[in-house]
Amino acid sequence: MKLWGGRFTKSTDGFTDHFHSSISFDQRMYQQDIQGSIAHAAMLGKQGIIPAKDAELIQKTLKEILADIEAGTITFDEKAEDIHMNIETILISRIGDVGKRLHTGRSRNDQVALDIRMYIKEEIIHMQSLLKELMQTLNSLAQEHLDTIMPGYTHLQRAQPITLAHHLLAYLEMFKRDNERLSDTYKRTNVMPLGSGALASTTYPLDREWVAQELGFSKITQNSLDGVSDRDFCLELLSDLSILMMHLSRFCEEIILWSSHEFRFIELDDGYSTGSSIMPQKKNPDMAELIRGKTGRVYGYLMGLLTTMKGLPLAYNKDMQEDKEGVFAAIDTVKMCLPVFTAMLATMTVRKDAMYQATKGGFTNATDAADWLVNQGVPFRDAHAIIGQLVLYCIEHNTSLDDLSLEEYQKISPVFNETVYDAIRVEKCVDARNVIGGPSRSSMKQLIAKNKEYLQ
Image (cartoon, rainbow, N blue to C red; front, side, top):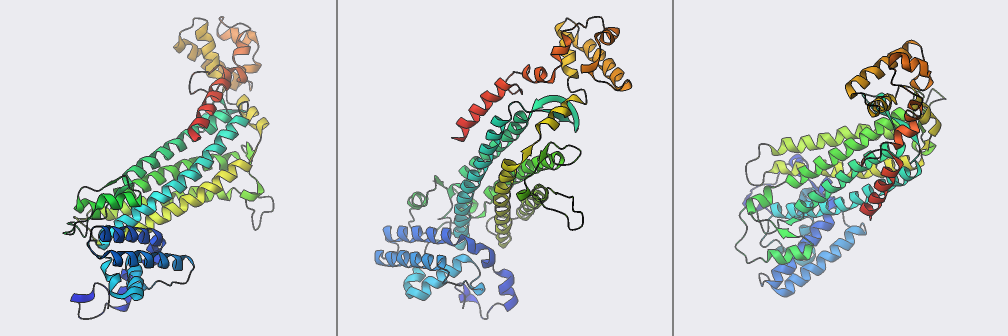
């Protein structure tokens, strides 16, 4: 008979057991479940709710069960439904009636809410460590490429010259925000629901604050209905991970473009590329494509849980069992993508010459030519129109602003003189942009130093 089977006259259908069971996926929370039960048992003994000797035996046996699970000598039973009932069933099988005292003053509703919060807290710390490795790699690459000039783009059209350091550190800013979002989610996850019971707390004199301290929570939930029915922290995590994957995906899209023959800005290491079964010349950026593809999967988990939660009345509903698979899968996906992406970046070869040559086409120095006119006293709108005419002239004559003669410049505007040529050198265009946030060498060095501080 199931532990909850007192009011039932027959067993559940065999297929229902399979349909109803969550042990296939929630077994990964066995450590958190046992840690929570140990703290709960200790509190029950401390408060005199159960005999102290029983509390001690329960704690001792739970630690033995934990060791046996980690040694691989325990097989979970689908008929016991979930990780909570499995562990409690094993406990009772070992110490009999004493084990039946463990569930005093709690429900599976607050138990599972506790377990998933503990699990997510640990996983956030792990993901942040992986994110830190990626940010350190980006900062180191930026240090190497302070002088690697490349075109910046808008609308995927060459726009203005920047450096690879500037481009890489733009993504580092995104990942810093991801890291901070995860820290914020950690704060809201770090609230202990145990003691909420099924929905209305309990008549037993629990010391919730003591248990929270034992389990490393910063505070406890303030409403038992909310304590068992809240999954905002899961939604918040899935939102954080969706945004993080979006940033990885955007970067992957650029890696894919840059590694193409059309760009030839980079070459990926053989360890992070694949070949074709039919075309011997191919070197495909499959790791970047897979990360880009897996982003949609994480978005799906977020939308799935939002949809699950949107119509649920208070308090707990079985629908909420659907929270874990998506959360677990999203965490697994991010933990798989981050180290692959970091290693792919760290090992790629940058083709500095190709990047530099690309800045020579597409009139990336046109804005600087207009700025030069402004510095000669020409209103910006007039300067914009003059340079637009020069660009059209260059297109019609298959030349560039750098290669025009002074006579050709002066046909459009007599304001031009020899100093315009220095102003439109791509190196000058980059280094003149020394405002905070700009691509100049001095701006980038300051930002790299700030990032080192942040990452410490």
